[in-house]
Image (cartoon, rainbow, N blue to C red; front, side, top):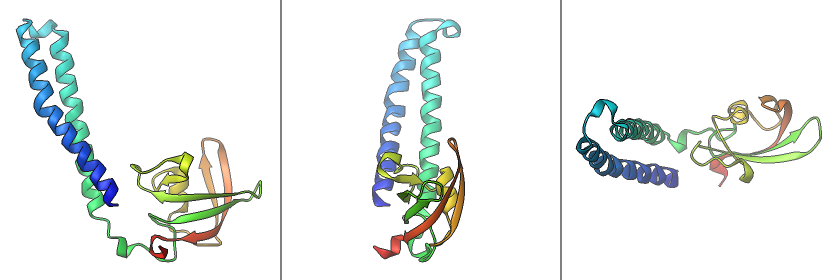
Length: 154
């Protein structure tokens, strides 16, 4: 969790620096070019400034929500943030392992799936032994939770 917060804070600092330095310079350059109504540089600078402000607001909101997560209150017997689950595909009898993480940490190729992804949402709150149907872009998948290791299990 500390790594995620640090990553968000670093991105916020980077965008704040860009907002302080680049738009004023770009706007000054655009002003020197004359009529602002037909000035593409000015319009581009204003659009970038708006985009960066929106990104900053999003990152600050995400950091705020992460700060509210109390790891001690996460369930010890159900799938939640930080859980590792081994799923058995009921159609192919193969197993797959996923760890539920935040959207910033997700990397499907490494088995790290977001708690807000279709699979993550379907698994949240489930227990070992539960059968889960998950609607994905590939179609409906049916799994059984074979093993569950929560964040508390170390």
